[in-house]
Length: 92
Image (cartoon, rainbow, N blue to C red):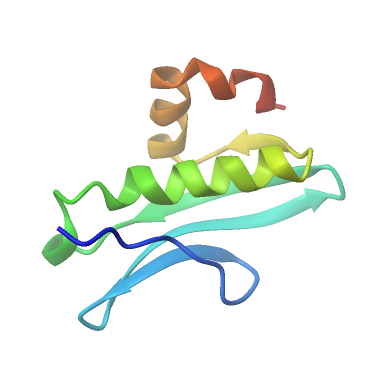
């Protein structure tokens, strides 16, 4: 499998596009120091490739790099944070 690196092409989502389908981790800024992750979605055709995990990891690394606190509204992001305690200090 070729690794698909998530990217941000415009504000509001980290995403990977494969075969015209888009897997996303959406975000918005609550304020200058806090980022909210309300939704993560992977189309059925792209599931099972670890894309959601890649997207969330990229999103959390973005938050870490920019010294942002995270509000995980999305259930997938919440579960990811539970499984990856190295990011617990980011939670607002």
